[in-house]
Length: 212
Image (cartoon, rainbow, N blue to C red; front, side, top):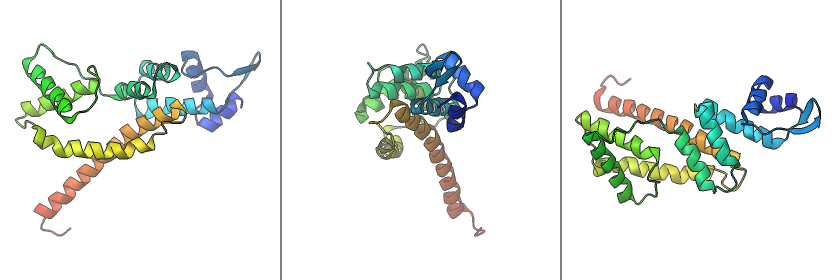
């Protein structure tokens, strides 16, 4: 297909496609003449992935380039590729190893992960993310114990058992990463919305006598 047809098939404007080509995010098409190239379904898949990373994952171009590089690196297994995408969409957390409160929170986070038997890379940004959340609770006078976190752990395990089946692990790598990003971000948002709806409903049952 020509670039105009690629634009129609992907929903990405031609100038944007040309920008992705210049930035190396999209591989060049097969050159058929000095001014014309042909594109295929692999280019459509790649544009879907870029849109997912950009519009859903809200990643900057530099981070998208890092994920794309992992997708294209055949020496990396699927676990490493998905991990690169996971780490890219994680919120940035600034660790403070010199802060004693931070150090205790990080130890608490690491201990929780170890107790659960989860295989998490020592440098995973999610470790710092969890430590930051635990530190925030501590400073607000609402410290979280392993027991109080158990319902959240069980919910996470149940959700992942369901979500892992929605990722096409045996198909094109672009499709797997796209499904991971969309599933993590959008389904995570849905979970938060449903929890807030459930809070309102529970409050109404417990506290609202109006019957509305």
